[in-house]
Length: 153
Ligand SMILES: [Zn+2]
Image (cartoon, rainbow, N blue to C red; front, side, top):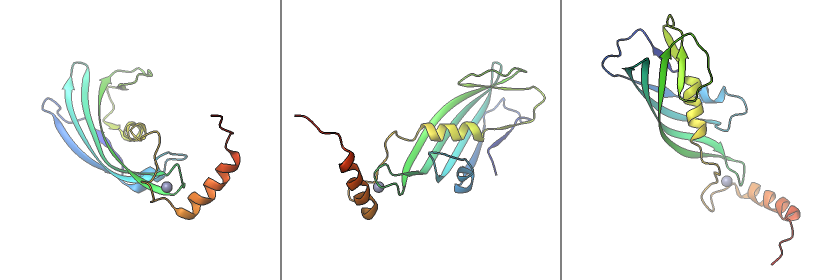
């Protein structure tokens, strides 16, 4: 299962496709900040000047590690991005443009969608107060106290 856009479609009228991202897809990514989750990805593709314009909306819940107790926790994700697809035989590093050779018939959007999910995760993520794994949080806080720098008033 993946997020593959069929490029042989007629995009003169906007084409909307819905995909789902499951836990399994996310768990295949090594050393990922996102450890799992479930997302709905809606992609609206329409013909543009040199290729296609894609409106990508991602919503769902990501599983990440809590900064305080290291247990899994869920954090909601709802993000929208616009991506341009250009049909050209060049490979450049461009942030919001994907170059696709003219003869290519499909485009795998999973790497981009994964990046969008990862980028939308807030920098700090902790369980709401009182909902951490108590044992773990206590052990970690004991450890932290010993290492805390002296604070001067
Ligand atoms: Zn926690």
